[in-house]
View 1 (cartoon, rainbow, N blue to C red):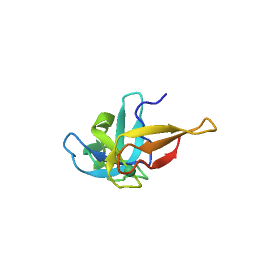
View 2: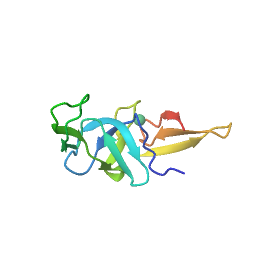
View 3: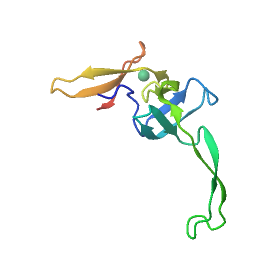
View 4: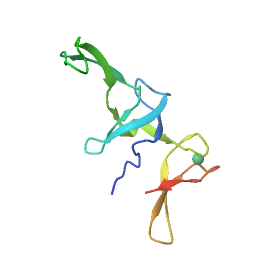
Length: 111
Ligand SMILES: [Zn+2]
């Protein structure tokens, strides 16, 4: 079972490291290494060789570097606040992710 509770497409807030306080959308989750890639956050410069179609000049491109999954929190779509993620069991055996904030507690999505 996935313990990270963060999925591609989630809006997350960075709570540690050089991008602390910023929010962005998760574009990739690396479960094996417990890393996430967040759109336009933690950018790094990468030198590239020329590519005839994509990048005829070669040179330096910027791309997202991985962020440790423990350094991000899900931003609840209901209350807009960063939260830990809980699970709520459904009568049909399914599960939903739920906001853990006391004043919200709304379901986020089915997993
Ligand atoms: Zn919430």
